[in-house]
Image 1 (tube, rainbow, N blue to C red):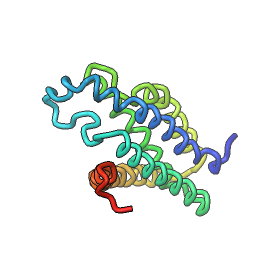
Image 2 (cartoon, rainbow, N blue to C red):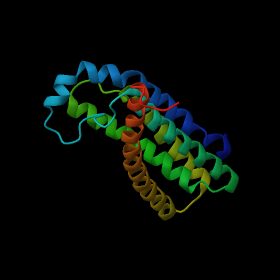
Image 3 (cartoon, rainbow, N blue to C red):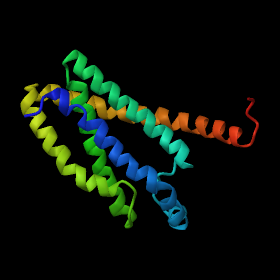
Length: 178
């Protein structure tokens, strides 16, 4: 059986495989469904906050760095509560992809890996729950706090993306001083 030090790295690996699907497809997907996306009556339109692949990639790089830091800190401290909560939040976000796809009624980037990885993640959570022997109360608190933490991180990353977009536009228009 794998040790927790090995299992920890499943999160950043799955994260990047899932996000490669999104990075590769989100630009052409937005182009293909532009008219439909503009006419949607739902408040939260898929990938609305990502204007281009550059800003989307920057957000993913920041989130990837966070998953790696969580893994390193978990291994160093031998405390996997935050990792468990982060892995739970990652797993739960696949459900959002499924709901989004059902509501949109068309392909949405990320759905392929969401469908493939969701059962794997549930199995990993099941096995890790037995391996760690943390109380259910501790695991629930970890999951709730990490889901809230992810929401807060997404909020700040979205704010940074608009700043990053402006810097990229400035650089592209030669307003950037060398």
